[in-house]
Length: 595
Image (cartoon, rainbow, N blue to C red; front, top):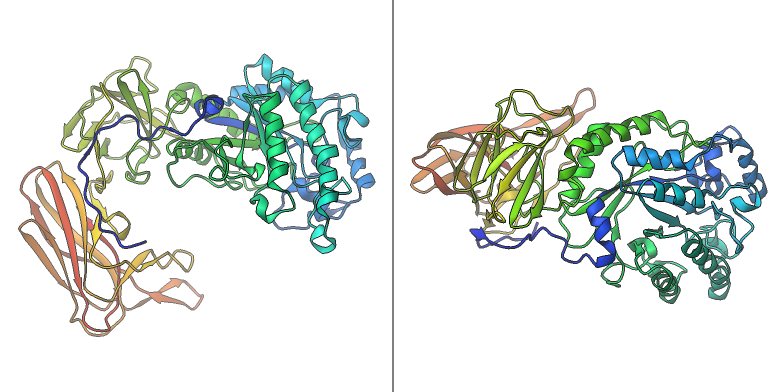
């Protein structure tokens, strides 16, 4: 963290500043949809992560990489098609699952890195048309049209293990000329993409999978522009992702950014973006995969992304008979039931202006309806106190209700300054994530950089939520498997400032947590607010054991109660921590707690 000396901006009155202003017309359906299905299915589905009794030769266990990882020759690889039950495979079932799961689009691996196409391609003999009478892209396209879903196509353009001049990573040994690679590009990539854009109706999205910039690959920018221009020519409404190999900073005509595999968003963006994710670990079906994420985890991933203006595309890896693993379909259908009730808080919703981690109870999404604005408070754990604190919004709500309540019965609340306290019913309306709607007649005003009141009624003041410090911070991330917590090292006089809103006057106890490994106690810290000052002599905290029976000795971080501060009236208060270490003292500061 860099040196902070921020001016505290009180009220921000604006249009929806969380909105994705950099969304073009092509991508509007995408940002409205928020939730889609990914399908990894191909020859590799017949292997199920094993080849001749040997598991995939890589601990990442991406089953779709088995041809490359286990060094399988093309003709032997094709024998996996014998395991496919073509009488049972019905792509419409995948579309129906997507529909029931609340998904708005479906993206299938038309050609993965193995180079095998799921349609009858005239540009290659390595596709379904040469070995079966099936065209999976055609069947899925018709199913998506029937069920009102957008169709997206995954196409591996950079890597192709089948074509003589396609890139595979063994060419890091042998090398490849630009001329040879362009032969692959012109005789397979361009013709196949043309086929897909021409023969299967409207394509909503082309999803490419080059996870590094073109400058680090054999692919040239000119080739990527040729490919993108072909899409723009044949299907002008089709959107393209950044894994084309062109970042959105390099080419603003790229429609959305794709994050890393299973990487969730961590900051609000003004352009469209998406996380590709799995329910377990592998993308293609892997029979030894057991890392199933819970429905709650998947819902929180979706909600978290939407709260930062992002999309979530969740993968299924059907088996060779088309069957979707029960653990996947079960979780998706549970998500669909949640979206049947709470989808208003996801579809067409956007980020709000408050900091993503401000509240300890969950996430916020927002939606404008004419002049009116709705905030959707996604409550991950129903508070035992049966009250929910909303900090940072200075506007008074016009009404608050549970999204699951069709009658929209109003909840009682109180509002003061930048604080709204909502009275909750005893029981949460949803076992996964409950949603509370807070309505405002206009776009709500906020105050930035406040520390929010926690569900338990306290304030956690940390180096991460200060509004200013007099010296540059020396942050240390958590380490030793989290047994050493996040903290900042103070070895010279420093002063931190936070701002809170007190809605109920009275006294609050003050605790401070730090680690101090010197033997003297000459250093002091002071906690100040308005006319109150608490002084504490820094005490040695010693060592502790981080992990039993492991010789795991770490610095001890200890909490000390240093007194009480009276807050005589409602209002905004600045809390100042002044730390004065004597020469050579090193204080590892963690937090101040007020309650």
